[in-house]
Image 1 (cartoon, helix red, strand yellow):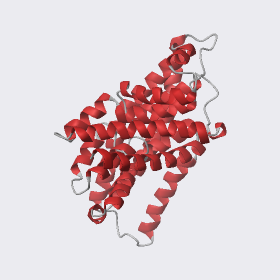
Image 2: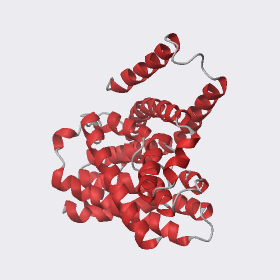
Image 3: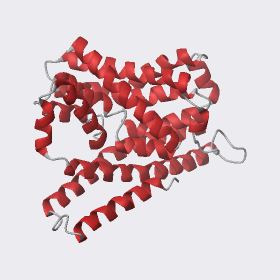
Image 4: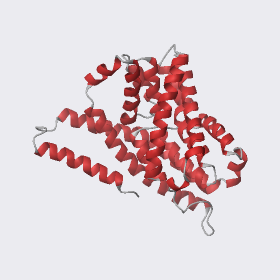
Amino acid sequence: MPRWPVLAAAALTLAVAAAVLTGAVDRPDPAAVSAWRTVCVAIVVQALPFLLLGTVISGAINAFVPARVFARALPKRPALAVPVASAAGVVLPGCECASVPVAGSLIRRGVAPAAAFAFLLSAPAVNPIVLASTAVAFPGAPEMVAARLVASLVTSAAMGWLWIRLGRDEWLRLPAHRTGHTPGHSRWEEFRLGFQHDFLHAGGFLVVGAMAAATFNVAVPRSVLDTFAGSPWLSVLFLAALAIVLAVCSEADAFVAASLTGFSPTARLAFMVVGPMVDVKLVALQSGTFGRAFAVRFSAATAVVAVVSSALIGWWLL
């Protein structure tokens, strides 16, 4: 397991301790500490069932599904497989925590990385549960649901095609083991081992990401929101950045966006499109599954594409 998340968490802890010792802060605010703890636990508890779902699906794909199934389901040309995989995200009712281990398993089973990444981005954003929650959060505004669906599909497909054009295999670091059925092991034993590895491996990064999200959530003053809400362009960038650090699960982010009534519809759309594709816990999960070199590059590019897509689709539909 890469050590950088552990080192980052340790550095954050030391920074807080140094601030207290040097008098930068007199004493921790009990209310802030309680809020930090609540947010951190809430993110983990909210994401854990979907992480569990994702690792179960990942283990089942690896142990039970023959590689030829994926070869038949997707077009052989990666450029054509990307939009198909992006649209396939509609059928998986899970969040970003579920999509990362599933994408890793798909790549290990021979699916083109570009198609797997398109699925990774679309599944948390366009599945029926997310679209239904968006419709409930924005009653009487079907255009918001349509805008979220279109912007998310455009972003996921664009990132798949960008990977075909600019991606490098050396950026990916996938485990060399568990690439299919191993002689001498039963299918159920392989499923158990694969599930255990993926769940414990991704779960540790989920906790680190939740700690970072809780820290940012508590540190951002409420007055900052009012400062950025007045500018159409800054509000889009601010809510996109806020989505990254808040790390709200995609099944709940529409309600958070709906509560930000001071911001424009396009800015709130950016919050809902960027969040399921790029947030601190997702970057941590991607780093643990695919490697830091991939996570940094892919997340940065995805954030830019998602913001541009949200702005254009919002201008068109909202």
